[in-house]
Image (cartoon, rainbow, N blue to C red):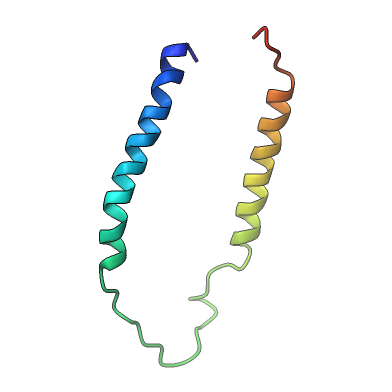
Length: 77
C-alpha cells in the first residue's frame, strides 16, 4: 500500500466508529419480542455445536499466518 492509502485508513476507521456509536444505541433500545418454547428444542432446530470451535480455528490460523508473513518482512520493503 502506498503512503496515501495508509494515511486515509485511520480516518475511515474513525468515521466507521462514529457511525457505529450513533447507530448502536438505537439498535439496543428496540424491544425484542420474547419467543415462547412449548417444549424441548428438537434435534433439527439446534445449531451445530461445533461452530465456536470452527470460528476459533479459522481466526487462529489467520493470525498465525499473518504473523509468519510479517516476520519475513524487513525495513527495506
